[in-house]
Amino acid sequence: MPRPIPLALTAITLTLSLGSCMQQNLPETPVQPTPPASKVQLWLTTPDQSKLLSSETQLSFSRDGSETFPTIAVNDTVTYQKMEGVGAAFTDSSAYLMSKMSPTDRQKLLKDLFDAQTGAGLDHARIPIGASDFALSHYSFNDLAAGETDPELKKFSIQHDQEYIIPVIKEAIKVNPSLKFMASPWSAPGWMKTSGSLIKGKLKPEYYDTYAQYFVKYLQAYRQNGIGIDTITVQNEPQHEPGDYPGMRMESSEQAKFVGEHLGPVIQKSGLGTRILGWDHNWDQWNYPIEVLNDPKARAALSGIAFHCYGGNVAAQSQIKDSFPEKDLYFTECSGGFWANNFGDNLKWNMENLLIGATRNWAKTVLLWNLALDEKGGPHLGGCGNCRGVVTIRSDTGAVEKNVEYYVLGHYGKAVRQGAFRIASNTYNAPASDLQSVAFKNPDGSKALIVLNSSASALTFKVKENGSSFYTTLPAGAVATYRWTGKGSDTPPPPAPAPDAFKIVQAEAFSSQQGIQTEACQDEGGGLNVGYVDTGDHLVFDRIDFGASGAKGVKFRVASGGNGGTIQLRTGSLDGPVVAEAQVVNTGGWQNWTTITAPANIPAGIQKIYLVFSKADGINLNWMQFTP
Image (cartoon, rainbow, N blue to C red; front, side):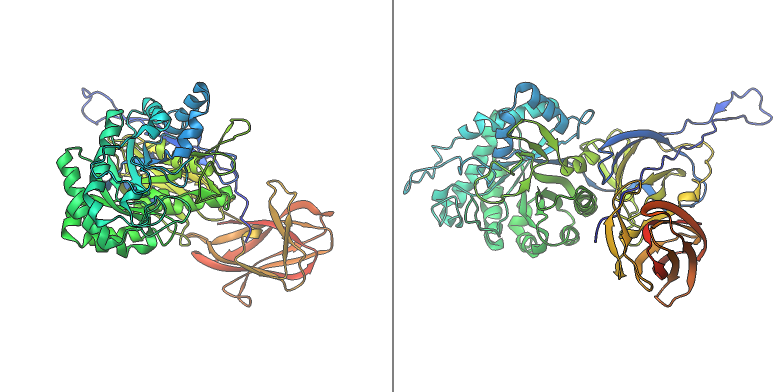
């Protein structure tokens, strides 16, 4: 089904009355001014890309009136996980591309990525331990000739990373000194494995202790280069054994033994304080981390579990939390790609499943895959041939293009700081209301609320905290981040927003239809309209929310080069009661648009609406708009 055309943001200006109050009969008491209204910063991204992490006019809290519109209540007395941040991976490919930029261009890119004031504010990054598929070569930090072994790791070296990965990371740290790091291996050195290669195979049991020491040497070497690693995962995607880039299969029993009896004790003895995470693979195999954590020694050694997005449902994270509430959850990888090139669809999916979905399911981080790739999805050596980085660095011009993933992460990075706690906020999961949210409280006491309007219409709603609130409107498919300090305001409440744009539904947003076709629309806003209709053809809109008041009027945006006809709205079924009817006349052309108005009698609540062309001799329909 074609996506509906996003609506323009309707600015809601709250009228504030700042007064004063004086205790009666006590003239000697000074006048007490009403506390000023808390200001709300707003960043907005729309699916048509007309707004991209755009800083909008500030809103203001005032004393709450009544629940006129859907209300997102924020409660900072209810806290959940402590956040560690959002970001992506300094893969070999990403760091290489950045290293080839001029110092000025690279500094600008790093500020765009890691500076919260001028950029997206990323504050967490993942580093592969050795090569992944996104590398210029396949390497580990202890590569040997065939048949050689080095159980004492005398030939261990991170020289490869010192060439350009570590220098680029250190430049990023200068931009954001709070930047935290997670590291993940794709494979042990080939001589430790059953395959004798970085490709495929398992870790040989006789090298469990050696491989644990390999982790320690890596952590120590990076620390000596000025980069502390806060967490490590045991194995990237342990149930995936790729044939053309480094990987290593590890069963749950093997991971439990390696972590519980080798890696955990060695890391603890090192005094590095680095935390260990298990799994680091998809949501759909949540039984794997359960099996690992059921092992007492592994459970004691693991701080938490890491997840990827490529299979299953984000709710699996909460299954782990319910079973092992003392363990932390991390989201560590998801890649955009050229297979998904609709900005609005990608924005919605990433918000629903990652920035909102993963954090509401206990994730302390939301990390995407490559920070940067070129316009061909490279450089890479095996693996994904059409992945997309958070940004694209063009190989022909050197220009940097910010992809949808950049703006997704920026909606968190602009407003949420490390050490923030997720706090309570109600979310209206689609299709019940289509407003989805997540809220955080920063260490400085400021709050941030991220909201997705996943519906096909602009939605006006209220944000409420501690007896104060503000109104705001989000276009269809848009995302907004709201940030404020304080507990609201005692300023008298403004009137509710005028309901003259109560609900707009794009004609192309039907859930099913009979007889119609869509075509490019030349009306304002472009997009598609429905047409080529005959008498009896119809559209079905499964769930339209008419709120607490229902609708008493409807406008149709129509055009006709024929004799027009009659449009009816029916509720419940094709034979249901007629709740609105409008006559369409010839408008002088199939793209000569006009708006016609008709009375309506549509009940409150969520309704299934049938739009029936009860008589049709050429009608094009762009949208319909309901009023209370």
